[in-house]
Length: 150
Image (cartoon, rainbow, N blue to C red; front, side, top):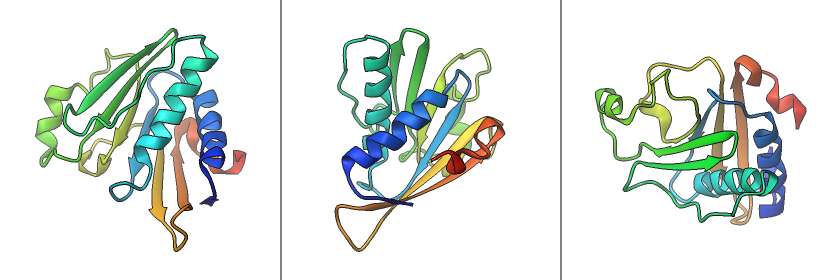
């Protein structure tokens, strides 16, 4: 699918957000600057607006590795694994903790070997038009047929 504008991206992220529940994983892949954090920002800000919570600035967690957002019934954990080189480094981040009731959005998830049951993998790519992006969905568990819902 081709994303033709930021408004188009917002419509797609709303559909993702409306289907979210705790213990979901969203994997975001694509080159630097392709829109992974923009997608995450749209999703989090939409949930904040929907739940009547103050809209916050959503930044890339490249240097912090993790930003957390409490949105009433949602806890969102936004990870950026770009700087992680070995899977064993992930243990300290708590991504795999089953005690953690949260939606986990993970940029650069390629290093994760343990694939979670309820996950949506989203790949963003540049196109020949600098204002457009190609977006691909691969769903597992409840997300299996998500691309058909768009």
